[in-house]
Image 1 (cartoon, rainbow, N blue to C red):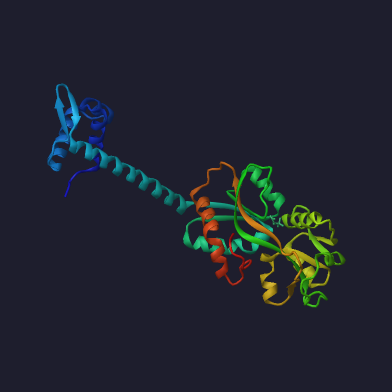
Image 2 (image 1 turned 90 degrees about the horizontal axis):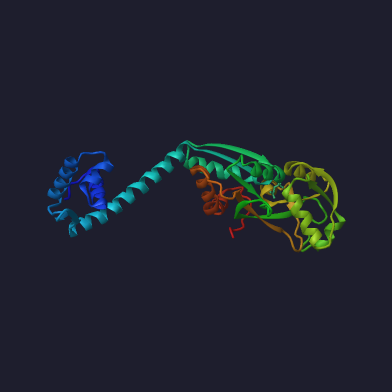
Length: 312
Ligand code: PGA
């Protein structure tokens, strides 16, 4: 078994690089005899000469070249270990600032709970707001990650899809269309819809979908949250067009139904977004990878996951 220390290896590496005891000694702030002595000890341990002297110059022997090769590999591995350990330290002390669209509030907390169980020492600050505010936060660079239904095209952001986000028509259980199959899309124009506030991504997606088809929905009340829309639909104030993620409980408890309408659901996706070129902290990077790789599978196991759609 080879007995050598990292210190000897470091000294050997410096001599091999300079091919000079004197210059290696200068670099390492050691005396020249101290360097020669360490090399002599190393050669004794190895059992072979590592340098040979020809005239005034020294050269690496074959054993020296081999050791130099392995020395570089060991050094690379050590520096890799150092950076991995550094990241782990960052992960343990890290803080995650995440902002999500109000609609994503129905599944992001479950994901955060699973993530926090894996990294129990991190702290999370979660803001739930609408699309308009999310865009402002991205612009001001005061969040690590944003979860939203449609990344902005004009802004400088990196956005990756991690899950489907179907929008469906929801109605009260006793609605005349509740049990109908393949309701024509145009039939919806006879109904009154409750709509989200104007900064909402859901609202923008609904308006775009119908206007692309030359249709216009009759809109009733403007309602500032998914929760309030669900309550209003149950109260018979109109129909709603909501992300499937928001109504799992109402479907299970049979308080609302999803209408079977041709060409629906409106298929959207969830994106994890951050500013382009942003240097993510270890925690933010870990959460982003967690969302991208594992969220769809984990959500399928959750009793009230947003949808049974598979990740694309
Ligand atoms: P919002 O979210 O309707 O709550 O704004 C959905 C989205 O970002 O599209």
